[in-house]
Amino acid sequence: MLIESVGLENLKEKEEMWSREILWFWYHHAISSARIMYPNQELAQAFASKALELQNGEHPNQITQLLYYLVHHDVESAEAWVPNIVDVDDREVVAELIQDYKDNMSFYKNKT
Image (cartoon, helix red, strand yellow):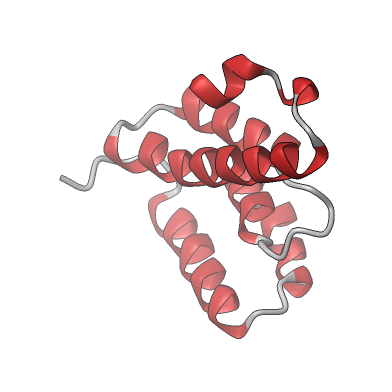
């Protein structure tokens, strides 16, 4: 909240870049918290939208987009997105995420 309260537009270029990275990282991981720890679809969707807004086009992480699709129940787009993921380890993760979605017919559950 502190970083966001400063306003990214008020920062120098390098400060803005790092602030965006920090905020993206937080929102990216908050998606999973909202769907697993506190099964809340609306919150997960808001976090996914915010993470994508903060992620620049050259960012190497491609899982955020996949999570966006899955929290919006768009498994077809998620599957179509998989070829965009070049990292082999990330492809394994996304395969598990998609399978988890299909097995549970939902992406929101409390694992505790």
